[in-house]
Length: 505
Image (tube, rainbow, N blue to C red):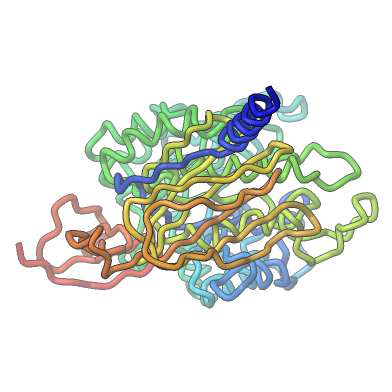
């Protein structure tokens, strides 16, 4: 009888250990290539940093701790035509092109991408005569829309923004049609229906001067909840499709695996990038910084965006008590020191430092996954590296069995487990090339496992090292998008670089 109980207890213990193992199987099925991660150069109520460039210095560039590479800025409607920008600190409105310049210069110097978004065209172009959206009693509740007789002026106005930035040392990589065209607001805003956006792009986007401004790319309007009707209507029209390079949207009220995933289907079919250009997570927290569970939910949002087909993720403010850099506001202390990195920045670094430039691979888990699931995973390949992300919000640590498509010869584990251990790195012991291994995954943790492919392994004799080039688009010398490039044309890479090439086909 004693032996029977001993055997039973041993069996139960073995089953418990086995139950705590989650298996992640990675295949060589490939999806989108990731352009990068970033944030908006805004502070407080849309007031740019101006000469305070410490946030971008902390956050941007491959040698920074965080590794962001995309910066969003507002295209203000206040200065048009000959552009006379007031001296610093002496303007009537907080909206100003000059305010983003110092930060944009640093981002570009560090190899990053900068793009601009209009919150509104100039008021004189609109039905309500003001840059405001019109949703206020003192504005007569008149919907602010772009007047049809001003459609031909819109892209010429964007050209003036591009000229201003270029003349001040910044080549802007992309411009958007409109911030949240489906959200009727009392602040700066402009409404477009999907059909109105289509009419604007189809008939007038050719006026965007791509040749003069370094092959600048055009981003679709950025709807509040990533409504796919906006991007789908553009992509279903051949003329508009040839003008649009990137479809974009925000996640307010709609998680990544909903509208954005739906919009990404048609975008992938036509080789378009998918950018999530604004969202703030936990920004309603009063008088405190986000707790660690809320930081893990942010990590899951990043992960779900990748699973949805996203190629770039741009957070809202880069400096806020619920963002990446502290503001110094006393009501959010302790921990909210001005211009010091916050925990959310280190969460972002798992993706921005390691996933940027990679191609997503298929990853299947034995545990249930989905929006805000207790366990989530994703996988990527970049050069000779295989990258596996694992996020666990539960209180129990579990071992992770990882099955890889190729044998690997070495590995590194980067883990974040809370404010006292935001980024810890250790070596994964691999004595000989292997394609299946057991690794640790602590409780309530964000994990990045990076493995180096063993190119000499028999398991990958037929493996052809992929060429990880940035996606390219082509334009004629007049700035019109070419579906079949031929002769002398402009070649534009996803990272913003462009050059004149001759293609003989």
